[in-house]
Image 1 (spheres, one colour):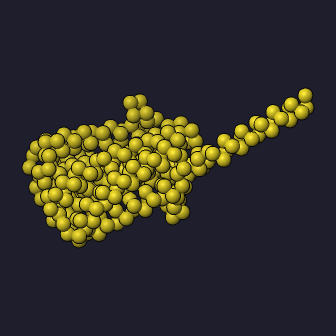
Image 2: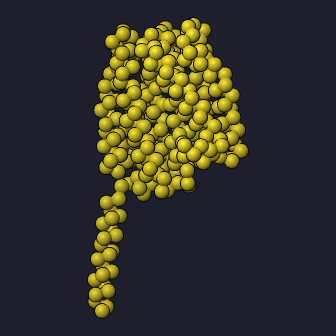
Image 3: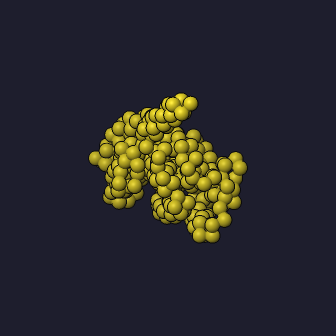
Amino acid sequence: MDKKLHQLFTGMLVILLTIFCLAPASMGATKEEMSTVINLAGKQRMLTQKMSKEALLIAMGVDVPKNKENLGKTAALFDKTLNGLLNGDSDLKLVKTETPDIVKQLNTVSDLWKEFHKSVKSVLGGDVSEPVLAKIASQNLPLLKNMNKAVGMFEKEGGSKLEAGLAVTINLAGKQRMLTQKMTKEMLLVAKGVNADENRANLKKTAGLFEKTLKGLLDGDKSLRLPGTKDSAIRDQLATVGKLWNDYKPVLDNAATGKEISKADLEKAAKLNLPLLKEMNHAVTMFAK
């Protein structure tokens, strides 16, 4: 009997060790590491839209030297973070992703990024021709969609480690950053006359989702799976975001309803979207701590 028990114990130990050795590194990540992964993977979505926005601002002659500088930095950060998600990056505090399905998805993102990066480099090199802008307009959404899919996979993996609702909250708070840039990009596409009707409709939807999510982050939203927050510091930060949003929303509403977009509107959009992004990013970091 003792011999049988010993054999049973040994067999179970072997199985457990095998499972442990085969478990993905990200599954062994701490809560803080998972929060960072979801946060920075989510930030990648924003960067796809920020690059598109900066390319359009350059093409429209809005503060060209500054936007070229910004575009170069945004592209470099996207590239560094994507490599960090795949291979780890101590500077970004990213652990290497080894979950096979997520690695596969990140490789899909990487393939799309290579093509989009070529278009970004063309703009940085001074080519803002219609064919290049058309590529940016068509390539950015598949890149965004597939990056968003990867974030959802990270969120699902992190859900078992983080407090109830926190993985979803970090994901959707992070998505707000992307929406600040997406709606600005859509306004610029309308102004440029690129699929104007479609982009007006997209702009209206994007702005509506931003507003709905902002309210959900504060007070909860069952349809978004958001629990809301009672943390006074985070609520104050979201209130700051809300004030900036109230300033920016009328500009976007005018563009979405078909009113002519003036140069002053473009300059106001270029000025207001970045503080909105900055303060929303601050809110995300507070959730992720």
